[in-house]
Length: 83
Image 1 (tube, one colour):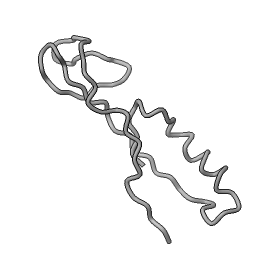
Image 2 (cartoon, one colour):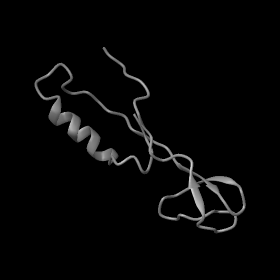
Image 3 (cartoon, one colour):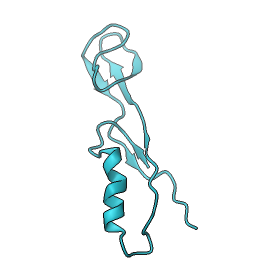
């Protein structure tokens, strides 16, 4: 599973939720692997793309806060492995 920093899900909780809803089903004991991706932005001041930390929302080049978010809301299942 791929999650962006603004997708609305807490990665640590996804496995806990799955454990609860899969109890006594064929999906019981399923393991969820979460890969978190970065927050990509475009700076409207210096016109550069970069990846930033959601706690430091400013352009790493010019320190402007005039940014356009290019990614960060992703929530995708990358693959499913069944045995």
